[in-house]
Image: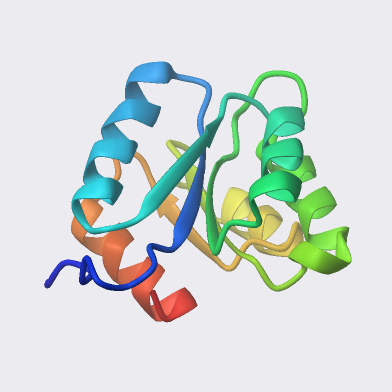
Length: 130
């Protein structure tokens, strides 16, 4: 995989994850591949950051405290300015029910944790032309 050219405008990826260490690890990998990263620690914050930053893609943890990733994804996709934003669900629960629920909530893909970063970068590129 080649990295994004520094001459191009970086695409913004919103990482929604309640564990700070996991958010930081995702930030490091995504920035290494040329993405601009913004973060949120819960579903409500994710909606606000998405409205403000207009990310190209969102990596959404499904098991968030308070408003979970399913509801946050539904609300983000309901906003006209964000309805085409790619949302990739991320969860440690590798069950078909969670995958189906994520797709029904508007997610465009599903990755299980621990994340395979090679697959993540490939999915981002295919899903969003990044």
